[in-house]
Each structure stands twice: as C-alpha cells, then as structure tokens.
Image (tube, rainbow, N blue to C red; front, side):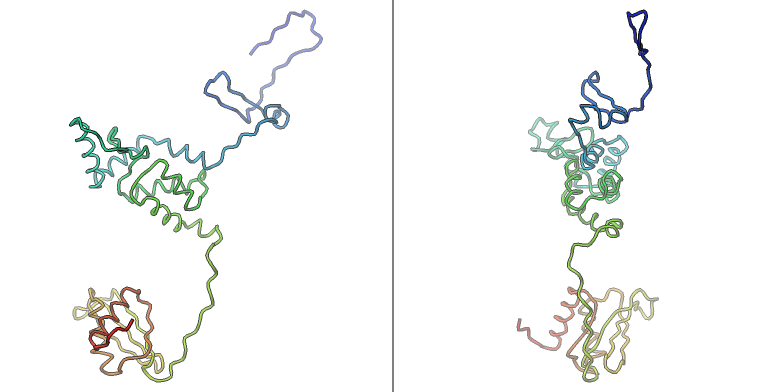
Length: 289
C-alpha cells in the first residue's frame, strides 16, 4: 500500500504500521469484507454498534454439512451391506429409468439416497457412531444434551429410529456422566430384608454360568435357605429355559423342603414371570389376579 501527497513541505509524516487482524466480517462480496485489529476492539464505531455472535450449535451444524468424499464413500460401502438401503435405492433407480414417477420426498443421486433433503444412512453401527461423535463429542459440539444432539443429527441425516439411537448414545456418554449433574430423583436408602422366622421359609436363588462342561451341564443354580444358610447346588444345561428351571426346582428343592413363602432373586422380570407360571402350573395353583 502506498501513500502520496502534493505538499512538498509536509508538516506531518505518514507512517505505515502492520497490525494483526483480530476480528473480520466476511461478506458474499469480497470487496465489502472488513478487518479489525486489537486496537479497534472497543473503539471502532462498527464494533461498538453491532455485536455478532455465533453459537457452537450453528458452527457444529455448518461443519456437519461439510461432508468430504471419504465419508460419502463410507456410506456407499455400508449401503451395500444393508438390504433395506439397497432395496430402496434399486426401487428409485428402476422408477427413474422406466420413466415413472419417483417416490415422493426420495432422491437418488451419485449413489446416495436422500429423504426430505437429509442423507439416508444405512444400518451400520460404526457409521452411526462416527456421526454421533462428530455431533456430540467434538470440541465444537461441546457435549450437547439428548434433544439438541438429536436435532443437529437429524438436520442432515435420516434413518428409521435414528433419534432413539442418538439419545441412547448421549445417555451412555462417559464424559457427560462424569461432568453433568444427574436430573433424576435421589435414590432412597437401602432397606434390609426381614430375618426369616423358620427354616426354608425364605430362600434366595442365583445362577453361576459359563462353567467348564461337566456331564453336559455348564451352569449351576444355587438355592440358599436364608435362615440356616443350607444350600442346594443344581446343575443345568447351557440352554435351560424357565420351564426347565421350574421342573428342576420341583425335583430338587420343593420335594424336600416344600414351597417357601418368599423367594429372593436378581433374575429379570420376564424370566421370573415365566418361572412362576411354569411352577404354579406344575403344582396346580390357579391364578386369581
């Protein structure tokens, strides 16, 4: 940059000083771009008049929309392994080549599928995890909550039940669990179990699994009397069902100790429900519920 003057005897000298740009306002027309140095901050009329802010949500959304070719190639490769994705793409190509009306809101372009503008991604755990990490774990994203992360992802990507998958991913985020305060109600105090009044009136059951095979059995059902601490150790096959367990319980425990008034176990509700149903059916007990 040069400066000129018609005054042959200037009273003031003009000096040029290089300044580091701290703030810039970019426009669609490059000629209107504005650059400001550290000395302008707090003093320049433009900076004093206008304050332009860009949240990390918008920055992350802008980065998400910038998809490089390698990422798009990953989608194409994963789509070859997803039958539903292939069927949808084949259907769109067949309709287009046949001169028929293409399905509303679906577009096939460059080997990729779009539904209502968002990119349709195939069923692939690694691909979904990469998308979730970019929209949740990155420094720009800042570990948003479930709803905001889901909103950012669904702006550019589509898949059946994708929002539910994203919520599960955010819920299982290790950093969020350590840094964010829980919103659920505080857990109550542990309540001790009552002391049994007689032998075999209250029993506890559990399973020891993945044991070395012995006589075709790889797991052991343990039944302990909470009053005397006596126990039964009963071998079971690896694929034992709730009915098999109830039959074994009748033969090994009930015929010797009778039916207890209380059974404590940590098995899941579905298995315990099937166990009690099979047990009552064997004993001839009718449900009155």
